[in-house]
Amino acid sequence: MDRRTFLKLTGLTTLAGGATTTVAGQNDDVYRPGGPRRGSPQAINLNAFHDNEQLAAALQQIHRQSDRTSLRALTESAGGAGTVWEMQVGEGDTNVHIITQIHGDEASGTEVALKLLRKLALGNGRQVDRILDEITLTVIPRVNPDGAVFAYDYDDDGREEIVGRRTNTQPWSPSDSTYEPYYHYSSPSGTPSGYDMNRDFSIVTDFDAPDDEDQGSWFANRFFDLEYEGYTLFSSGLRLTPEVRAVTRSYLEADPDYAITHHHRGGNLVPDSGGKGPQKQSLLAIMAAFGPAYRDRSLFYPPDYEPIQQAVNPFLDEATSTRSLQLNALVANALAEKGNSVFDSTTRYGYFPLWGSYLDALTPQTNAAGMLYETSFQTDQIGQKAFGRYLQATVVGFDVTLEAIADGSIADVDPEDYFDYPPMGESISPARGERLRP
Ligand SMILES: [Zn+2]
Image (cartoon, rainbow, N blue to C red; front, side, top):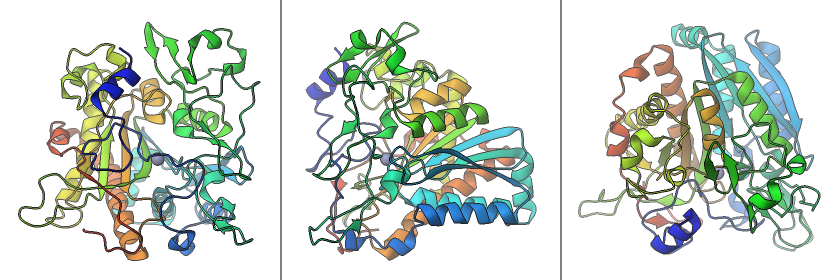
């Protein structure tokens, strides 16, 4: 049985709407083709975000003022909306790679990454010094400039509103691949189609789709099922986007020990958190990538499920898997230690490999511990005040991660802590303006 059949049978693909209580891994946000998410563009406070020009200017300013950074333009985005930048800071032996906003409408990680870079590039103090001594940090603060600041006439009033979108703005043509990949989406009339780039990675990091004579036979409808080291890697990416090629290059050059990818998703509750009152809303869902050593901990598959590459990542060894669990547990524990507050609400995003993703295609290349952040709600779904809290959860996460790597205490985290956090609870999608339950 292939995964798609399995999921259909178990009902795990019913992500959209309703009282779905468990959500399949990495389909972080249900795709709504091309257009904006719930709410209107006016719900987005654009002042909260850097547009592409402002982001470039901010990075260049940090770089000018600091003698600790390197800054390079990895590529122009496919649709030409902006440059994909990479900034590096620190001179330590442990390498950390962070990417944010591969989905253009998932912007908060970019703002936090920028704050972090500014602090490490320009800040002083023992903590900053220790991080710079122990860690080389490589950050791609916006993988998807096309989707980040995407303008079209949302309400048909003749004026363009700025609306982030998940995909880049890159058309598919038959010369690109045998079939149009499943992760290429058409868009509302008059807007360009584009790729969901967190489906475009390949475990074969120099894979070149148009030149591969086998690719036709590996397609199942629009799904590209790559044969690799004796495994069929279902729904692999074809590396058709310049952004993904650039991120892959950056990753391999950075040779990370830790790899972090930041996203948003819809809201969800913390199961059994309410007592007699309302259940808590989860601020952050986390996901570690792990291999066969932990296959009996999968949320979705029985321990003996075959093929194994649909349940866990067979290219992640036990040591790497354990470090992934420690990395994720570290962040959840730090938030929980803030007491019975809005931050003590971390849930676990059920993991299984998504072969076109950064996490599953790239972390095996360098035995990197992997972590995926899923901050609750899209940026157009939350008000400005709530937005500060969501930023803060990621600030805590990034800070504690670098501190614990730098002082070595990450090795003391009990990997089993990860499994103590509950799977994501019931989905919630409050209307715009509705007060969110903390
Ligand atoms: Zn995402």
